[in-house]
Image (cartoon, rainbow, N blue to C red; front, side, top):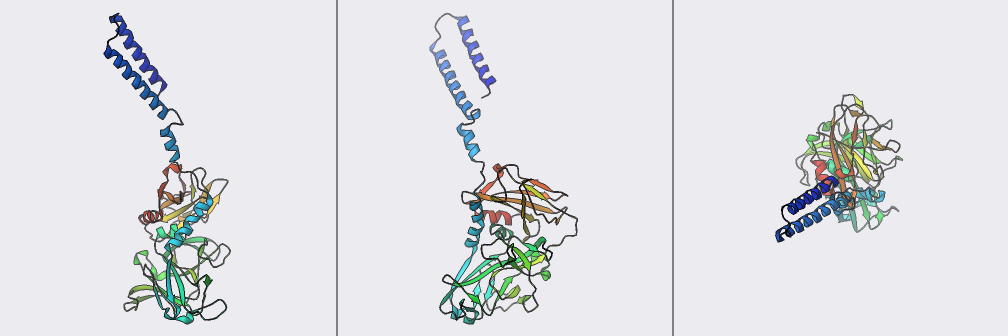
Length: 377
C-alpha cells in the first residue's frame, strides 16, 4: 500500500474517535468497539495487501518473478531438435528377401530392388530382417522443431533461401550395423502445387559446415546436386502400384541420409540484412531465431550468426527483400519442452526486430509449436 494512503486512514480514524469524545464523556458503546475491531481488521488486511504490493519478497511478486523464464542450459536447448527428429522418425522392419515398397505416413514411397539392394560393411550379402528408417518433412513447423530449415549453400559459399517440396532422411540397418546401399533406391513424394513453380524443383543434399554428408543428428545446410533427367523428374502416375497415384516427385538415390526437393527462392526487390535482439541472458547457445516467409508454406530461414559484442542475431548474407512480409520466431527450452515468441514484420532497410523480455515466451510441446508455425500466413 502507498504509505500516504496508510497515513490518511489512520488520520481519518483518529478524527472519528476525537469527534466521538467531544460529543459524550460516557464510555464508547459496544458497537463502536466492534467498529474499531473492524478497522483493526481492515488495517491487518491493509498490511497483508502491503506485503503483496510493496514487499518485493511477497508471494504475489515472487510468483510473477518465477513466471519469467530463465535462459536454459545450452545442452537442454540443443537436445530439443534431436528429440524431435527421433520422435518423427518412422521405422520399418522387413525381411530383406521381401524388401520392396516402404510406404511413409505422409505419402513418400521408397522402392528397393530386393535383397541385392543391401550388403554388410564387408561386402557380404544381408539375410534376415533389416530396419528401414524414414523421416518426412513437408511443412515449416516440422522444419523448425527438427532444425532443418530450407536454406541452401550457393556455389560461392553464400547462403540463400530455398522453397521445399519435401525433405527426407532414409537409412537401413541390421542391429547396430550400418548397411551399405548397393543398387540405389527410388523415392517418390507427393507434389503440393500450392508451393508453386514446381517445374524449377531439383534435388539437394544436406552437408555439414565441413562439407561432409550430414548424419541424422547433424546441423546442416542444403547443397544442390547435379542430377540428370533419369535421376529426378516429376511424374503423373495414375496407376502407381502403391496406390499413391497423382502428381509425384521421382528421384533415384545412390546414398542414404538427408535429401531435399527444392527450388531457389526468387524476389526482384532490393535486399537488406536484418538483425534480431533477444532477451537478456539469451544467445546462440540457448535459443534460436527463425524467419517464416508469409505465403510461402515451405520457406523457413534461420538466423545463422550471432555477434556477442552487439548481442544480435543476423542472417548475415543480406538477401532479405525489403517490403517482404514475414514472421520472426524466437524459440528456446523450458522444463524439457519448447518455449516461443513470434513477431510479425514487414521488412525495412536495416531491419531490427526486438524481443524485449522473456515474459513474452509461451510454453508448449513439439506438436503445439509445429501447429503454431504451420498456422502462420
